Image (cartoon, rainbow, N blue to C red; front, side):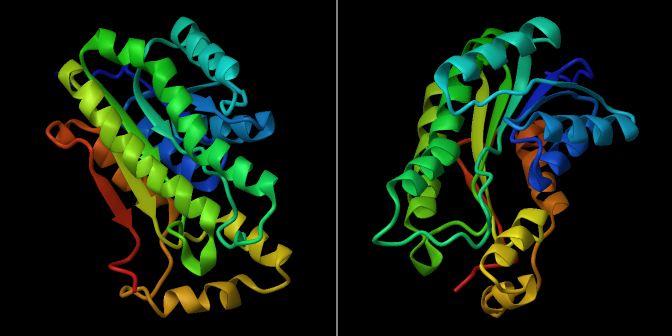
Length: 255
């Protein structure tokens, strides 16, 4: 199926650094962008960035961790912008250095799972009927940067492994309908949220990332744009025969 500039891409979590980069990347390839984030002001920041780059976008704020809002947002997008062809689940908007270990606060665990796993599931379920109806579609799940359980980050590790499983299961479910599902797992990404988290811990961003950088073969953090490039590959027709896969954007195998 040839690419059409009328296709709609839903970017959930579009207000953060990676989501903004993904929105700009896909808009640059002709997609109309549905900007989804629970913080309305961040939605409009992304809208302005996409518009300034010559892209088309519309804002759809909502807390997609809640089933009724996830469904309502997807319905509004289909009615106002067009039925979605691409869904990017970038809802794990967590600080890069947030500690989570035993014993831990129940609300921290629940919050991480709601954002990192429940929201992608709810949005995928809400988008399913549109993707299946078109016979072509893409779902790309983006896990929390630097996820995987380093330093006992239990909630993030559980959410990330859940995303892996969800990606594989959705790929099996949606494959017969021409819909591919893949995941991107970023490593250490230089973002504003990473710097904010370091400030909250009373350390500089450079000190907080030093230990991680020593274990990255390329010796540097990644950028949101590099994550967006990986998302675009999965969203593009170059990945027509790629589904159920997980791509690490982490500067090499991290010890």
